[in-house]
Image (cartoon, rainbow, N blue to C red; front, side, top):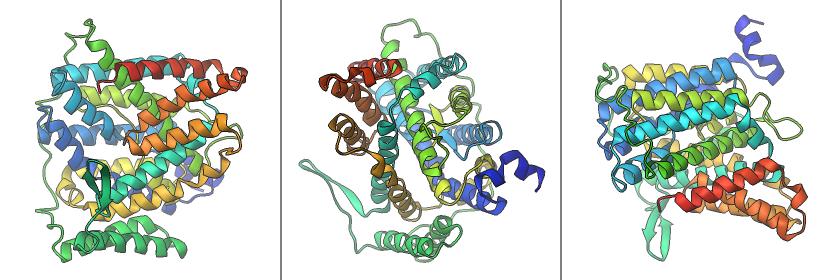
Length: 435
C-alpha cells in the first residue's frame, strides 16, 4: 500500500486510487457549469465576469483541496448557486446594497460559521437533528437534483401561470441527446461500468459538438483574466445598520442549512454516517466550509460550501479525500483550459444529475410512514426543497414543523434542545427573508 493510500485510508473505505480519480473527474464534470453560470449570475450585480470566473475557480480549488487533505471527505466545495442569485438579484438589485457591501456580509457570515465551529456550536446543532429529518435531506436533495437535471436537459421546461412546468420539446435534437445520455448512463450502470456517469457526460458532449448542437470551444488553452477588479474589495460600512442584519441572517441561515443538508445527505448515500446517523469528525468539513466562505468574499465571489454535485462522485465510487484532491486539481487546470471546460453542454451533465437524484432517493425507506409526527416534517422538507427550488427553505421548514408536530402529539420531550434553537433561527429566517 502506498503512502497516498494510507493517508486517505483506501482499504478502510474499500476503494482504490483508480476509482477515486474517476470519482473526482465525475464530480468536476457535473459541476463544471459553475464556471459559466456563477460569473453570469454575479454579472447582474455588476461584478466583472472575467474576474468572477477566476474568483470562482480559486474558491473551488482551495476549498475542495482543503476538504480532501484536511477533512478527508469526497466533497467538492464551490460558490452556492442559490446564494449567488440571492446576492445578485435581491441584495444588490432589489435592496440596493453594493456588491462590495454584499461581499462584506458574506465574509461576516463566514466568520460566524468559523466561530461557531471552533466553539462546537455547529456540531451541537447538527447533533440535535433527528434521524428522520436527516434521511429526508438526502431524499429532498435527490429530488432537487433530479428537477435541476430535467430542466437543464430540456426534458422539462418552464410553463405558465397555473402550470409552472411542462414537457420540453422532446423531438428537438438537444433533448434527444439528453435522453440518449440518460439511457447510456443507465445501461452502463446496469453493467457496472467504471466511470459510467463520466463516460455518459463525455459521449454526449462530443456528440453535441459533432452534430453542431453545441459550438466547439474557441480554443483549449488561455491565460486567466485578472482578478484585480474584485480582489479584497469588501465594504463593511453598513455593518452596524439595521438593514444589514436581515441580509447577514439570511446568508447565514441559507449557507448553514445548505451545508448541513449536503454533508448529511451525501454522507448518508456514501455510507459515511455512523450507527447514530452522525458524520464522524463533522467539525472538519464544517471548518473547511467556513474558511471557504471567508476566502470567497475576499477574492470576490459569494458564499461557498460543500456542493450537491459531490453526490455524482460518490455514486462513481468516491469515498475518501482523494476524490476531492482530484476535483481540486481539475479546477486548477480550468484556469487555463476554461474554454474547453465551459463547452460541456447542459444536455451532457443534465442526465447525470437525474441519475444521481434517483440514487439519492434510496433513504426514503428509512422514514417511518406510520408516525405522522415524523413523516409530515420529512415530507415537507422533500417537497419544499424541490418545489421552491431552494434547499434552505425545505430544511428550515422541517426545523420548524418537527417540534410543532411533537408538541401537538404531547411528545415534546423527544425534541433535543439544539433543535429548538434551529427552529427559532428558522422562524427568524422566514420573518426576515426578503420575499
